[in-house]
Image 1 (cartoon, helix red, strand yellow):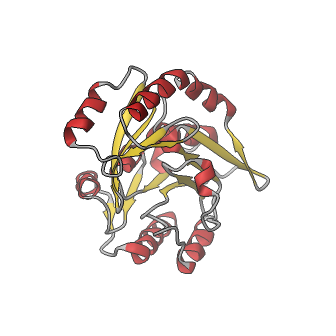
Image 2 (cartoon, one colour; image 1 turned 135 degrees about the vertical axis):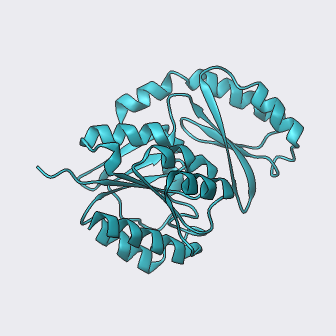
Length: 240
């Protein structure tokens, strides 16, 4: 039996831009899936992916790795044993989230995680430092940035895009060196580090660009939809 490589890709500002999937990007994804599995990896919750245009895929990792959904007969099925591992931290997560909300942080709820926008909550760098200092054992906090500002993303210590990538590779019997990761933001960096091959569009965060230059990954000279299409073509060239 032939083992197919796996391509893991962030969504926002890597494959889609302002929730738009370009027709050429969709065509490339369809072609890519003839040679490899394509797994979506996102900070969004599963419910938040529903309004997006249909994106060809073979599974989806949501909430920065806190939830894994397998694609079986055209349906997305939650990985129950992975979810049980995340549920161990739920009480700690809920308590920490409620504390931040009581301090005036505007909380974006997710089943196994939460996020908050620094500027949208009217907070300062000192407030951010206090939140980081109060982070309880068993949780992790990552920073990301988009056009809306800086985000704090909180999820179980056992989660993470990198850990979920490893889990999916293990399930499919795919060695890490046959995995590909595409991302643009700082919360993609752990995933980009562990994959066998790493790619980013030209609009990526400077820290992502520096990481890929250091590890020999590929940063497209193109930004936006053109950048997404360029990195997909580069992936397919390596799959050929």
